[in-house]
Amino acid sequence: MNQPDSTKAETNVVSITNHLSAFIRFSRPHTIIATTLAVVGLFILSQGYERIGQGGLVTLTLTIVASLAANIYVVGLNQLTDVAIDRINKPTLPLASGEFTIRQGWLLVAGAGVLAVGLAAVMGPYLLLTILLTLLIGTTYSAPPLHLKVRPLWAALSIAFVRGFVANLGVLLHFSDSLGTAPDLAWPQAIGVALFFFGFGLVIALYKDIPDLSGDSQFGIRTFTVRLGARAVFQGGRLILTAFYMVPIVAALTLLPEAGAYLLLIPHLAIIALFWWVSRSVDVRSPRAFTRFYMFLWALFYAEYILLSLNAIAGLRLADFFQG
Image 1 (cartoon, rainbow, N blue to C red):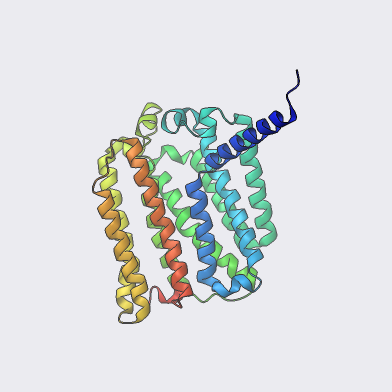
Image 2: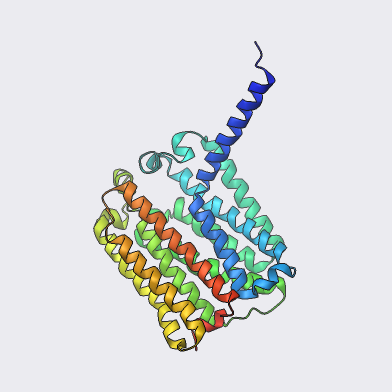
């Protein structure tokens, strides 16, 4: 007996909703938000907010799409190579839960990679190089023969290098080249920004393995957390992040008493104080509790690009961040 048309429609809506939910989880939303804010923030820092309405919107939008496609390729490939481990560490991911088949996962990863490279190739050499480096490092992180994930130092450095230097400098160069105007920045100062996000990426790379201790141990993945213990890695990450927060704080102090320095100094002092306040009560032995803290760390990462954008809009240019 055939289903009524209304029942079929409802079934189709539920199916589409379920697939969309699975795709969002497959894409790892916290990384999607980070990539989007980074591209928008770097555009504003390099070109100025007013350029969005003066012919820059198309370039900005296509850069976001290419960057997000590369993001999905990297996180998707990692899931494809970690299905068995994710059934222990992250059972709600769609490949681990069975919502997506392995074939569907490969199709999504391949499609994202082709889209990222294709768009970047059309948009210019700097974005193409940025995307290719991102895909290459993401592939070597997750897949044999290098499989950097099983080498904790190289794993952490690869994540930090992409989030710090590749993403920031590559996208800044791309916007400068594709829009045909010299951005209002000095490259030594831009490298300082990249260095700050390298440090932040390093802490993210260290912390992401803490809630995965059980699965990584069972499968012989010798992360720093497995080797040194969750508490030691947690304390080390606190010190590393604090050290890198000294970059904008010291920069702001060198700019005093200029009014713009307070826009840099006060928020960063507040953020690092908040980080220490929240981190003092984190239970590193609880995967669920630490995952919440890990998401809080990503929120601080988002805040950095928002702050840099707001400072640029307020008239504090990137070149002023690291010199008086």
